[in-house]
Image: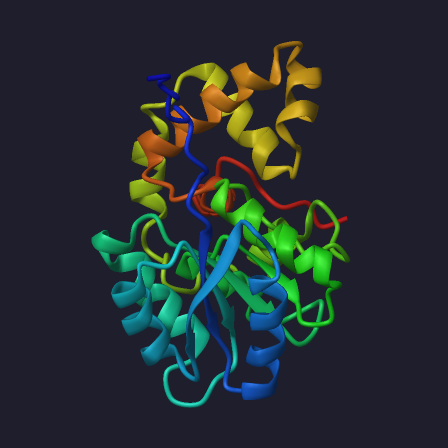
Length: 241
């Protein structure tokens, strides 16, 4: 009898997406869009932050599309809850904003969000945002410039959930090698791995290794958190021009 070998590389599990928005119509539109992708599935819908946190634990979501402004427990509070829960260390939060420039963006990044996206983004941009977040990359709205995160952090000063933690960040920075610090500065400047590699004359893979090591040493969840730490520790200072 002829033996047919099994496929040694089974297809990857789809990205599990949780939708958190108080507008049911918007959630429905997002659900249709996400579920239309073969590599994604919506595993839950929440109308407020408290429900989003509970469902993130229950449904084991990979990415939460989180509206900032919701009644009761808002998106910022829910993101802090998710970020503080060790069991949800792998969950990425993408904040959805009504405006491209949102007063809460700095607070969202400090709370642990991987990035933000305007609600008026194109469907492909939204889907790409989910994939970028899962990959551990920092996500900026397509309408934003590379220095937008730095600008918001500079406007926010030292206030917010991470206030008082700059000393701890500075202590952790001492564990970085000279090259890791150099890479961290360039990450905070909004450069991609390819751009950093070109600047330092090394391969993008080498840059990725340095970034991953810096994340591990600094306890950063993803690239966005590296940017926050770089500015709040004083390693990088925002330019006012």
